[in-house]
Image (spheres, rainbow, N blue to C red):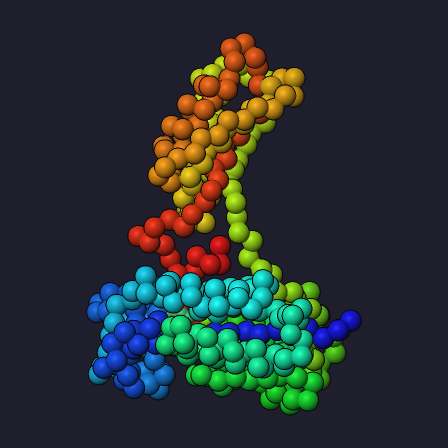
Length: 357
Ligand code: TTP
Ligand code: MG
Ligand code: MG
């Protein structure tokens, strides 16, 4: 088995950095980006200057105003963040196919099989950071290591605009000194439980037997035992591009009643629309499939000039296709509605974490 080469890249104070880039008078100022800049809502992120006042992501805006009354409050502009995100993701993909985005501003890259194995991974990471700077005028931090856990840990170690390498020489020291709350997957409750058992840092974790960790934390104990040793076998999982979304229904008994079948088509259209909404996609094709009582399958597709996403739009097309397909007096045992040729729904109803879904 050979060593993997993993890079984790994360943009620095991403939303706030984009705002500062687009309004240079904010440079060096405590900038706070959030929902409606005044009033209710929460902080999306804050510049490093604002963080000095204790302002952080997910904090109520009102609290931020109390902590940092002289801050510069900016309402988020998702279009701008998405545009920057698109550019950085395409830069990543120009280096390797194996890119796993975690949110708009970060991704894991596996460059183990890159055509230039002679180049150290850190050099590649510098190339990527340079490309990001040249194409977006934004800085990112990178972590380089031999697995995902360590690469991500590394990218956070020298923010902003930093590059950190964790290898076999420094891994032990870094992990031993790491606050237990900074290990991935350790939330508030687990952290408290760790403290209750006098585990405060990586060294304390390292000194626990695997048996004891499993006793205390169940199955997760194995992972924790490994993390303390810098072991993580998780692969970088490139996001699949979904080509279609569909649902189908097999009837308990063969059906010939068009009214009843169309009721199912309506239900399937509704389900399909819900799944599209979750993916924040619209579709440019609709396909209806039926299987007859003789197990013959037929399908019919329509391509659309304008993408659809609502249940009524999908149903109207599915209805037409179904009536074209269904022959009188041929009972069917299955009906399906699939939409394809997916594209991002236009901006109005998108959220920032659409990469995750
Ligand atoms: P992060 O990468 O977690 O934070 P950041 O880029 O602002 O700062 P850092 O330099 O520490 O990486 O998140 C990226 C963006 O995602 C962030 O700019 C705003 C958004 N976000 C939210 O809207 N809500 C949240 O709770 C978090 C954590 C992030
Ligand atoms: Mg970030
Ligand atoms: Mg991030």
